[in-house]
Image 1 (cartoon, rainbow, N blue to C red):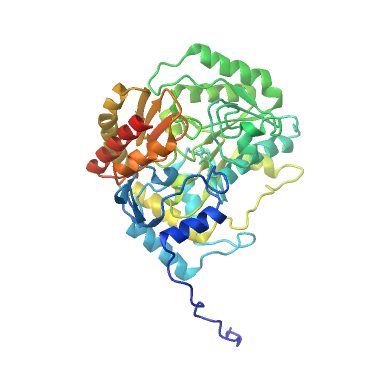
Image 2: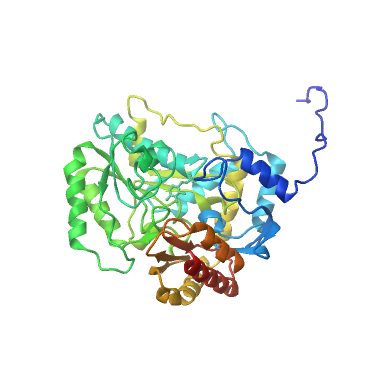
Length: 449
Ligand SMILES: *Cc1c(COP(=O)(O)O)cnc(C)c1O
């Protein structure tokens, strides 16, 4: 069919003003731009990043004498391959030449289908169906909606509550906030407004610690007692991230699986932080060989390039929902399945699995263990822990965030401490010297913060 004649669209962009000088940029930032967990206007000027490549962030203006920082944060767990990776850049460019986006209602496309298939292949076997969401929090919303709707469809609408353990973090939208830690977390402001969910005690700390039978009994008892009203148990497996950077024994995941099976409750694993190798196994559930009914992934899914997450579920859950009175999952974000993000995610997963990623994570783990060991002797340090490519120094007092960040920057490293924690989860491509540099910065940060 010949293309109809239409006026040629404009192909040039109106001239834009030249680049903003860093001071001017910061003035406008202060005036207009919210930053994460920040007041308005912001109290501390952020650093202006002009570009990034490999594991280095380039600053628009030097800070503490540094114009380049080694990234110790992987942009909040996401940039596992570092910045401007040629393979991911190429995947984005190729997809850009086809289409950046197209709606997902009534249409589909290769990047989304390939990504969903790939996720089904690499996650535990019973997970067969994939809902692509536009952020981690939304994928948790969808996961929880799946669970509630499953029971509603089966004629058991009274099973609509959620159980989790304390110390968790699942995102900042409404349902996820309700299962974040109710006390120490960022959302205690909303207690009394949020739906009241059921909280077990925090899992006893220590990845290698022998599982505590009393705690296992506590989980069993609480799940049993509330089973009649419980849709699901939702937890972060093995590593609790933004709730406190705590590690626990994988044995508790088996306890949850047993208790959920015994009492007819669904089990949701939020692997948004832990997914794609961070804790040493591809997914943290792999430490326990436990398979959830629903699982969320996000953060590192696109290698930190674009916002994308997914909720995966079993056929039992999908079929349950689809046999119900409302036999559809009523959720459909505008940017669902975004082709650009999905294409980069496919490339990122292939890039990860195409190398000996476990060896790289192990290498970083060894570097972090060596480099952080001596932090254990510093005054004010309560605990030092490392698991996979995650290193944590916990203080015995709240960190002075400005001083701690400054100390890290002075050491040439980007860190973002919070509460009583100075921690790092570097990109997997971080070389040994840079890992050592990050460790030195964590120590300096712990001393000054
Ligand atoms: C970051 C995070 C989320 C929220 O993801 P966003 O993409 O920030 O919405 C949810 N769960 C866990 C475990 C996370 O670490």
